[in-house]
Image (cartoon, rainbow, N blue to C red; front, side, top):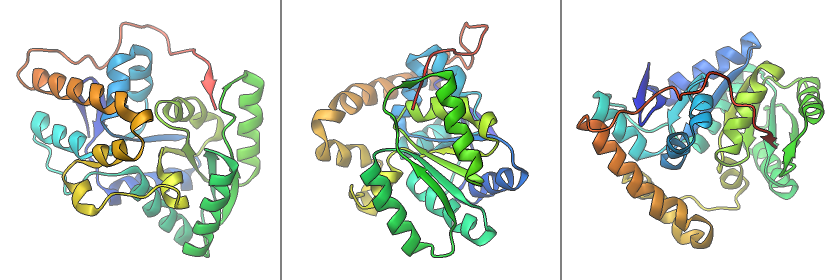
Length: 265
């Protein structure tokens, strides 16, 4: 079931449930767009009508951050046992893909990150078939390039695609590509860096306390200060306004057509 969090429809789900949905779609060979959204991801939908339409057209949005999980409880009484965090969901899906014989593909990040990621995953999941890994172009792509990328991914034999392009580029990618490649696409952001061993994850108590944003801010203050010091208070204000019925969070923007902006890949 989906629930309105500041106008973005977030799923009431768990790791087991989300993994099963993704694996089922992979076996069926159908497009299935997945995103793990923390506060920053939700706020991209709040601030951009076209992007909110994309997010609310996705098949599965998991509460990646504790504040999003807490919002589900505050607004809708949903009591989840845990958040469904993108990097951890990635491992759940990889484990099940290995068991089920489903080849996977990685798209995004830089060549050196992908090289380390693939090497570590081959050691961790020796029976996992990695059909391919392709770095981001870090620019807007043409219609022809979109078809070329999709053709390469399909030709690899992959059944599940992981996109690590950063928010919101990876959600745009999943929205635009899911029906072209006919497989689940997981927008999992920092999972590539984490599992490649390039970025350290915070202690479990920091994650449970909903303070992962602070840990990342300390790691990368120049890049992330605007995201966390401006968006986090805005998120909390809107959350309480929605809770008290003082602000209506619109699920659909006042647009009749799907977004047609260029795809950043």
